[in-house]
Image (cartoon, helix red, strand yellow):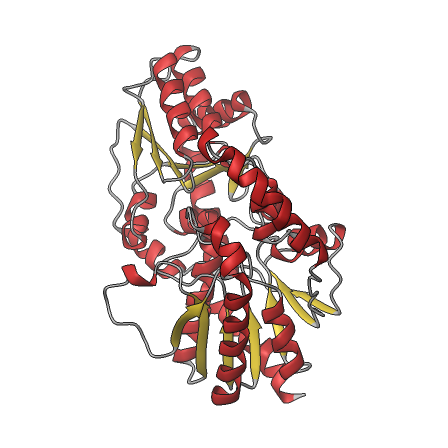
Length: 413
């Protein structure tokens, strides 16, 4: 099978677990002797120092560069040129590579003309794996010109340019893909996009996953401090992830319930303003001895971080499409206390492989942590249940095999 993957980002640079899935599935198909080619954006390609495989092509222009001051000018001077170059690149690649099937991955910040062209060139042989909301989101151009300027010095220029930009966008026809074959990582994601108006012809759920082998081996060699209850949050540090809920829960445990033998490790990067709000929250509650902040860690270091933790806190407030960190933590032997938002509800089973609490409820979270602190037997029971569920139902090998079978079915039609 010859498979072309089309994605906005590809590791080592990306936005999160969605892109990691792409890489893991690509590499898994390679090990099964399929020929795979990845076409992705140029984002951060100048930062890549190590030679990459020949089957990774970083050639596409994003609609908007991330955090760039050039976006407003490039909208008028380079937008159409970039889109034309993207389409020419895809057309030439399909002509040269002759794929049997195209798998569309993340398309956020890429023009929808790309998947539409793929559908035209390979009718019936384009499959989508949709793990975020990109099919129902406005283009980045629309969002950019709707958003206020970042400071007063750019307010007036952006306001003036924005009038003409919105006029252009108003008269531009945005293509809509046919979505003939669509795979989702959870049932929640399929229903959510249907509610938002996405129309697909054939849909199926292939659960997301993680490479559990790395995390499971770390669990066997875990080193934990016997007299300290180690709590871990790992992920993006943004308001929708609810990290403040974890800090508020620790404040209740320390100051109201007298639990002092604990340490919350917050690992991740994200919104700088929100990060400062979290540090201010720690100061106001006098939690310096109980909370530590660390920058996001390389993927290779995460298994030991999970394995060295007693409890992993999943505090998301928004409706998560999946929750990859849950699988990683479970496989590494950490007990999960999480909010069953969105697709995470299809992973967490309260009392079997985790304890749950309502999103945003710091008091309920503190209560669940206290239960685990007082009941080592419950911790062991949930750790075993979580590890078993991660390894049996959410391993990358299973995800790869199911996607392989689906693609092969399309090719064989």
